Structures are given as C-alpha cells and as structure tokens.
Image (cartoon, rainbow, N blue to C red):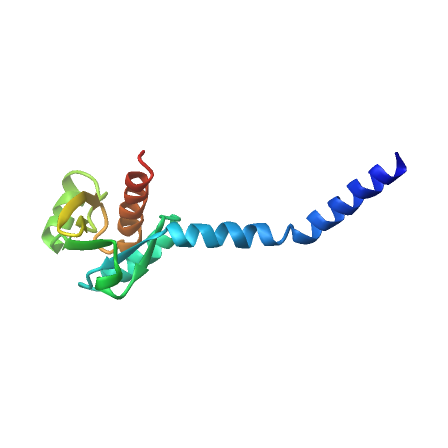
Length: 147
C-alpha cells in the first residue's frame, strides 16, 4: 500500500511541474482559432477601434495586411459640434446637457465580399472616440460569440 501512495505523490509532483504549461497550451490554441481583421484606415478612428477590440477581448486579431484578413471593417465617423449660439440658447431656455455635440459611427464588417455585420452608434460627445469605439467592439464581440 505504501508504494501506491508513493506513485500518487510522484504523479502529483510531475503535474505541478507541468502546471505552468497549461496557460501556454491554451493560449496557443486560442491564437490558432482567432480570425484576423483588417480595419480600413480613415480619420484616425481605426486606432481607437483597434484598442477597443483588444480591451473588450474581442476574438479577432487586427492585421495591417488586407489580404490576410478574414474580416474587413470599414466605417464612417460623423462629428457634429453645436454652434455657440445654439449652446447659449439651449442653456438659457432648456438645459446645458449635450451641448458638446454628438459623434456617430457607422460600421460595416465584410467577410470576403459579403456584409456580415453592421452597426451604428451615436454618443453625446463630439470628441469621445474611445467610448464610441468601445461600443462598436462590445457589440461586434457579442455578434461573434452569437449573443
């Protein structure tokens, strides 16, 4: 009976030595399954989108080579700032919320030549690109995960 326990303890020691390999093996498997995405550069917003995709743990890898990509994302950003007169009038007669303007982004994602996903988001600040990009990344992640 003592030999049996010794074998068990030896196996446990071996498993503890190999425990650090598990995350590496799993990460390697995830990288192999991750689709690549090309983001068409325009207006500098692509850097916000790339960062948001990483931050939201979206299962895509951004690539600068369009030919390697599984997905191709294109977008249009529309920033509207209110005029000074409109800001003053809004604050005098109503309330001052939303006087910074708005930012809207329309996104289309293609797989080959097929449109597979589209999204539009409007945020109440004309300069809040990070928040807008994170909304796009969150909803695209939900699409990829089937939520």
